[in-house]
Each structure stands twice: as C-alpha cells, then as structure tokens.
Length: 426
Image (cartoon, rainbow, N blue to C red; front, side, top):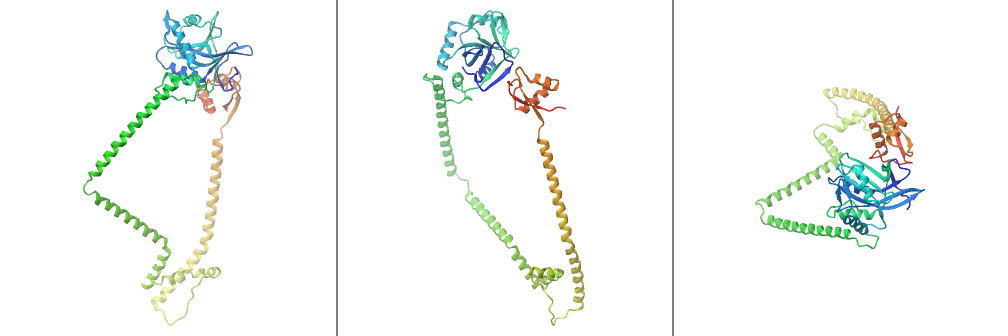
C-alpha cells in the first residue's frame, strides 16, 4: 500500500511502528468520546511495511456489541465477533483487523494492566494497537503490546482520502439525522442497505412536508376568500382617498421638477417684473459690471453704453449717481483681487490634501505589513520545542500567536517539512 500524500502528524513518530489513521475514523472516535457510556470498537484496515518498518493503515472502525466484562476485563464473545465480521463484510471491502479502541470513564476498565490482559486474550496478531480515551482524566493515547508490556506511542499520522465506506457506516448508525457527509453511488457490487434506508426516510419526510405545505396553502385560500366576502364598511372610500393622495403627490413632484429645470427662465420673468415695478434691475447689473467691460469686449460679450437723451435727472437722482460710481470702483477693486487670492487658497488646499493622503496611505501600508520569520519543521519538533529553541522560553500566548499567524486550530497538528511563520521578537 502506498503512503498517503495528504497527512498530518500528531506528536513524535515511533521508529518501530507507524500508525496511519484516516480522518473519518478519527471523527468517528470523537463522536464516541462524547457519549457517557463505554464504547468499544474494532479497527479495520491493512498492514504493510515501509523500509522494514511495520505500518498500520486504519481506514475503518465498527462498534462491538454483546461483549462482556469480567473482573474489569473485556471479553469478546463469539456473538460479538460475529457482529464485527458481519459489519465488516457489509460496509467495508478488502480489510483486516488492525486493533481496537476503548472510550470509557471507568477507571477499572482503563487500567493498563487489565487492558493488556484484554488485548492479549482478544487480539493475538502482531502489531495490533489500542486507542484509549480515559473519560475520567479526559486523556487519549495509542498503545501497542508485546511480552514486555504496554508501550505508549509517542505520535501517529492522520491522513485524508475519499472514504465512502466509513461515511456510509456512520450514516447507518444514525439514519434519522441529517449528516454532514455527502452520499455518493457505491462503487462495489455489494448491496448497500444503509444507504437505501437513509434515502427511504428522506423521501418519506419530504412527502410529509409537501402534504403539510398543500394543507397550509388551502387553509390560506379559504381565509382570503372569507376576508373578501366580509369587507369592512368604508374600505372603498379609504382606497379612493389613498389613490387621490398619491396622484396629488406625483403632480406636485412634477411641478417642482419643472420649476427647478426652468430656473433661468424664471430669472428672466423676475427681471421683467422688476422693470414694471419701476426698478431697472438690468441696467443696475450692467452698471455694477462696468469695471469689467474691457474683459467682456475681449470675450465677445455685449457692453451696455450710455446714450444721451432728453431726460434730465433731478437732484436726488444726481446724488444717487455718485454712489453707484464709488460702489463700482470698490467692486472693481474687489474683483481684481479676489481671483488671485482664491486661486492661491485652492492650490494650497489641494497640495495639503494630497500630502495628507500620501502620508496616510504610507502609514497604512507600513501598519499592515506583518513582520515574521519562516521556520521548517524538523522531525520530532513541537511548538513548545520550537519556542524554546528560537525565543529561549515557551509561553502559551506565544504558541497561540504562532497558531493564529499560520491559521492553525490545534497547536499539536504540525508535520515534518511544514513551513511555519514565526513572529519576530526583540
């Protein structure tokens, strides 16, 4: 059997036995750990060798039923073994027994001396392992047994593949619940009873939901018909008033848009009304702009000039003629000074805004650029060991920062050859 490519190392790997556990099997054990009772299962997979090192590839697991407990020892009866073989033939293909697992909070069952007796009595083949979860201590570990006793494995591998057989077995244990695993057509010729049972339950559930939706729709139609028959008095009048109000709002909005759009024409009407009222606003505006007549001649605009006539102004009118002249001079002075001042102010504001924007962008880029160093994981490395070698100490906050920088959920899930990002510390 080939070594899987997509693997994840947990702990240190032994030199005399390599354990590879498929991710769905690890997920199945996690589900069994959450149960309050004792759970026993058998590992299924293949045994192979890699450079004369024994390897176990666990790609399936089935629960054991009808087992017995005698003097804190687990006894696998003939009925229990028959159940294991039947589940293995139904849901798995080309597998052999690779060991077993135990999840229990009973301190008597999790005692290593009693576990060695149970293992030697029920699993007599070489290189078969035990995965133990002690619920009283909330600890887990993998063991191998020989004539010297129990030996705890320092670590093992988790590998990932399209494990349809383990998915279907997990579905068969909980057919009434919606699972996170996707069903795919079976690639083997064996009939899949669990998958068919799951599909039947889902079809029945969908049929019931469809009937409920139809009944709800019928009742809603009846309620709507009853409401139409029993209308409240005055409903027609209120609808008419609402319609008239909406129409009035739309008309008002239209008139407002037309008035805004023809603003220039309204200004012309205003000037005409001023002339009829005795105030020649057009002449006053032309007189106030006499200082800028030279510029208007150059630009091609018309200039209003004084024409002698037979109308002579009175003293009050002559007195009022001096005031416009003085105001015109002041206006010309202000007009000649305003463009230069306003142009310089706008230029200064634009330069200041551009400088502030450039400095803000440079500060943002400098703040966003993280500072870290890279480290390649060696054989036997852990995050605590790496922190001691790089920083001289180990700290929970430092380990959490490394996990956050590398997008890791578990500090123990690192493997040889992995490139880690380590923060720079002064």
